[in-house]
Image 1: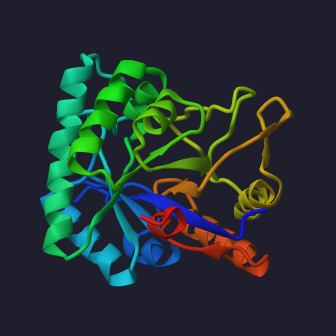
Image 2 (image 1 turned 120 degrees about the vertical axis):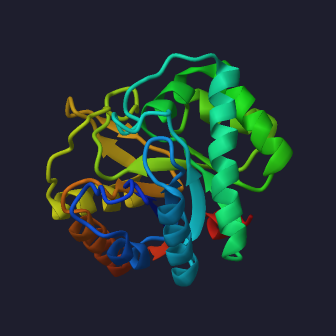
Length: 258
């Protein structure tokens, strides 16, 4: 039974005048505790990064970098072939950009969470995960890596002693192996159904898979996506049900004690 949990959301995922989803970051930010801010490769641009970091700082939301494949057209959800060194250098470039904007607004880099297809690739690619964690150990030893429990990313963080926060996905389904089912369009989920799913995970540590099987789930932070239709209603209902059941919401840095 959890008494405190983080809520994280992918933010700043637009480019110039182009926007996705039906919820504004300004409406979502007061209702979350950690923000994964797009760093320019799959979405985001310098002006939007600055605006989103400032918004997070205003609301006391933990600031995280959300690097992805260099894939604006595919929104970072398409795998791009490259060796581990190339991919880590892409991450270094993006995290560096976010860190400077965070410094500008007087906040620390709380965490790093790879985006989309890059998140999935790191989860199964041990070499990439270890190289990425080695980078974090050198430049941000207190920054948590957001990951899924049991993945190569999780294992690499454990082995190296890097802080980590395992995620539970509110608006994604799970398979029987505890992996999220990767989809390009999640449709418009029922906020009440998702809220009850989250509450059960917090109270029982279990989630129902796409085959109807119940599996155990380990997590510190709950993720939902700003581009999921009805995102504002989803986070509003999640907060209501968690707080009504005496589960406090706090940035992951407070939960991990970093």
